[in-house]
Length: 391
Image (tube, rainbow, N blue to C red; front, side, top):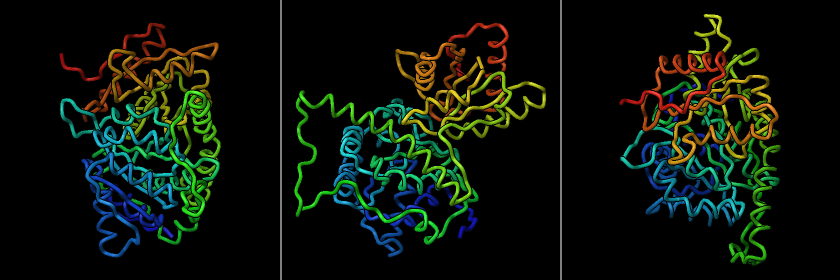
C-alpha cells in the first residue's frame, strides 16, 4: 500500500531508507542533506529502525565506514553534498573498485569558493569518473522512488556497484511535496534481502584492496570500465521492474513534447519541470520545441540519447557546472563526444545556468529557446553563454 503524505523530501527519503531495511547508516552532516541523516538518526534512537547509526568526524570517514560495513555484507547507506562529496573523493574510487553496493543520496550543491550553500551541479560533475552508477531525480517523489530502486540495482549480482541518487539541494531537498509513500511491506515485496556477491568472512579469508602492480592495473581498470558499461542493461530492466511494481516509470533519458520537435533543450535535475512550462507556452505559439532530460549520468546512455534526438539538428544544453579552462559545459562536452561518432552531428548550443543557486526564470528559458530557433534558421552556432551574467 501507498499513502499520500505532505512531507519534506529529505524526510521522505529518510523514511523510505528505513523501509528498505538498511543495516548501517554512516554519515556526517552537511547542508543541504543534513535532514536526511538527522532523521535517520532519530529513527534509530527511537527504536523505529533496527540499524547501526555511525556518527563520524568527516565525510571521508563516513565513506570509509560504509566500505567496511558493505564489505562484510551489511546493507549500507549514506548521504552527502558539495564539499562533503569532495572530501569523500579518495574513498569513492575504493567503493566502486571493490564492487561495494553502497547507496548514497547527494543533495547537489555548489563547491567553494566563494563559499556557497546553494544548488548547482559542480559537485556531481567533479565526481563523474569515480565508477559509481549515478542517476538524477527531478522532485521529491522521484528521489524517494529512485532510492528504493538504487538498493535493488546496487545489490543485483550482475552489477554489485555503488549508486548515487542525485537531487537538487534546497530546491528538492527542503521542498514539502505530496509524496506517495509505500509502506514497509510494499517495499519489502520489491526489495529482496541483501545477498552480497562478495563478503569478507573470517572463515574464508581473502585479500581485499591489495597493491595493483603495473602487470595487472590496466586489466583491472578495463574490467571496471566494462562492468559499469555492462550495468546499463540491468539498469533498464530494474527500472522497468520498478514501474511494473509501483506504477511510476523511469528511463535513462526522457523527453517532453519531442516527437515532432525541430529544436530540443537538454536538462538535468529540477530545472526540467520549469522548462516544461516554457515548452508548453511555445507550443501554444506554434513553435516546435521539445525537451530532452538526461536521468542516467553514469553509465552514459548513448543509445537513448540518439533515439531521443532522432533527426533534430539543433540542441541546446543547460549545464549547471563549469569545466574551467576547457569547453565550459561538462554535459555539453559529453554530448559532443557522443555525437562525434555519428555521421551527421547536430548543432549544440551551450548554456551555463543556475550556478550557485542563481534562479533560472521562465524568461531565461524563453530567451534560450529564442537562441535555439535562431540557430536552426541561420545555422550559426553562438559561443557558450552564461545565462543571466551581470556585466
